Image 1: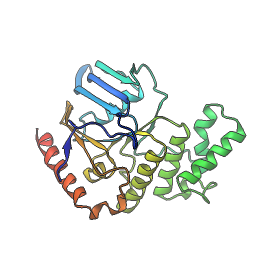
Image 2: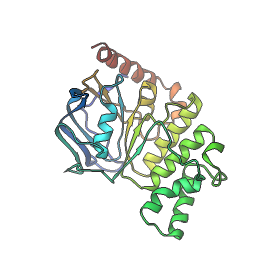
Image 3: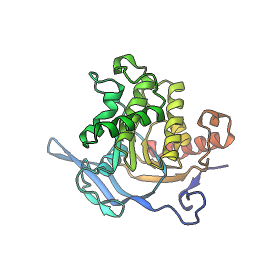
Image 4: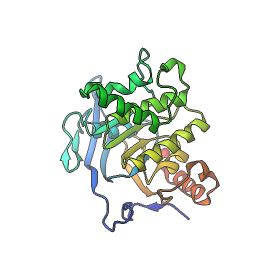
Length: 275
């Protein structure tokens, strides 16, 4: 079974014949940065639609504009050319309907797990009783029961990532923007976190944009995979990953479809890296 190029229709909700609505659209987007007075093109000619509830992984060589894509959706900066649309409206300023998670967990060292998860709820002015109830839900959701009073220095790498994920979900963003969040974890922890993220994305009906350098991870998590060319980056392949909503990430390595898809991505990405 080979990977399917994205001429196919997007993943549809169970029990529905209509495609999911488009949440994110890039229309002829380009981004350039000025470094010491010289304009440097990061990306160009980005045209893609992301449907609600999809997990879309993004791969490509370093410096090709993968993180730039997330930053524009988050509203951290505007495109140099074209438009980035969220639910049909141009993104102008910080996009509060998205949440961002990077390689660093950015946990506050002077706050315990509960205190770290509470940060976005405090910022939003959520009352104490509601805040405590929400934190209990999130702690249970990410499997940190019994570690509520632990400080970041007392947590393993995987637990820190779970705490950061709980804090991210406390915002209740519609879309999760994730920039290599599991890159620093060992293989076993990474698979556990992939499993948690995939399960939560389905359970909470979140749209996810996930940047990674790991093609195995891109296949394991994604409904689609966007492959970028070298800098200045553009999308050269938009690949559907037909492994389904019920995939078991811990068992995927035994699935011949998974190995075929990983092999196909390697074939697709190698010319892009050599270009």
